[in-house]
Amino acid sequence: MQEAVRVAPAVVPIPEATNAIPVTDKSWPWAAADRAVSPIDLSAHGYVEEEYFITGTARVFDMGEQASLTSLAQGPYTTRILVRRPAHPAEFSGTVVVEPLNPSIRYDLPIMWGESHASYIRNGDIWIGVTVKPVAIATLKEFDSRRYQALEFPNPVPASLTCGQDQLPLPRGGLPPESSPATENGLIWDVLSQVAALARNGKHGGPLAGFDVSRMYMAGDSQSGAFVLTYANFIHQYALGQDRTPLYDGYLAAVASGPGTPLNQCANPLPTDDPRMRIADVGVPVIVMVSESEIGSLRRRPDSDLGPDLFRGYEVAGASHIHEGGEAGSPSPIDAARTSGAVFDNANACQEQDMPGNDVPFAMLLSGAFRNLDRWSREGVPPPRGEPLEVDKPGTPDAQVLTDEFGNALGGVRTPQVDVPVARYYHRMTGPGICELWGYRKPFTADVLEALYPTREAYLSRFRQSVDSLIAERWIEPEDGQALLRQASDAASLMND
Image 1 (cartoon, rainbow, N blue to C red):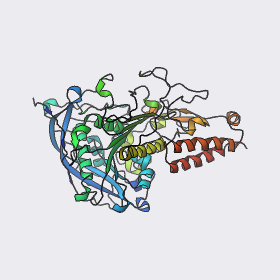
Image 2: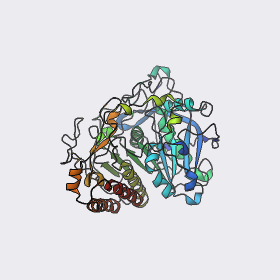
Image 3: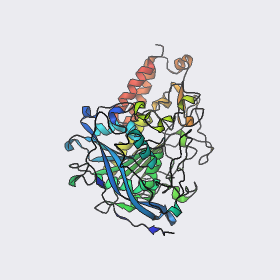
């Protein structure tokens, strides 16, 4: 049996990158911006989108004692990156966001892009989406076998050590198993390091040739958020740039309760009470934002401004795991229908599917958190601190959020939706599959609205005050505040004068 090799901090090799893969009327990137659920003409914003294939050698890691890292094997891989950047280097902010594309429904979902793309574009940031799992590669080949035929994550681990274990199982209806002995999920960690090394090489060539990168962040939502936290906890200190400092300058994870992703597909998950499950003192800022859906599995820890422990944890009142905005960058139904991943659709079976969706502005808070992460890294300005949600049994799977007279959550990061409410907010629906991850809202009756807000202006005045506070305290960006006010004006039209 092959012995594990202890890993030491080292400069990350730069993978080989192709030229941009051509786009034709018959072949285009999966999850292309102009073919998304909410299409975006990037050129109208001075941006371009390019897809590249990258090839390198990646290791399969395992956990040693006290969170030390060992390598079981190494082998070649080829994957793709999707780059969205300013057309001209002079318009570049210096900031790169790397998103491990979420593979929870067997195909790449650019959830963070969907949530925060307006902020990235306003600021001139570069976004890089990375295909990180074999199951997503299999779907890419279903979508366009000729375009993606070169992609692969072959398993370099000796046959005696393989198991084909399904990783991060979720209630997914009739979808096939996620992993097999022929491929290896654990190549993700070196891939994410090498993408950062490639992006930082922009002065010398590659996909970002001519772009001077000054900050590199990793951001992810849900399963990808767990990737982010696992990387930060266990890989960050080992992955160094040419200057022998860590490649990433900060991390942002959404609706992920902790760094619980096994380092390889045969590794057993760490027990929930294992001290290695605590988000560590990474040395760079780490921000975690969760909804009410994660409260039963959340491993809380104190905020800190004292390096190397730079941490913020936010719990958003009224929010649900799947939230408005995240789906905006998803592939169009026409493209998704060309894959087996499209059969994953339990939402139509949810009992509350006809109710209005949960519109707590989680995505706007995430954009604000990203700006605060960047400011914390660049200028040393700490982000605001948020109160925790009030729960009856903290730290237990049975924990329930305490509610006010309207049924909305107490404590947590507050928004006008719960402080100036016109509805009761639920973080889960009833039904099979992932119904529990969707939220909804139940509008108040006309009598309740009239008692709370005698006039439309009374409602709008309180709403404006709440939005102004969010902007002043740096929870959201001013542009998103204006969007909230427009939404409130629409809601006020339902009220009596």
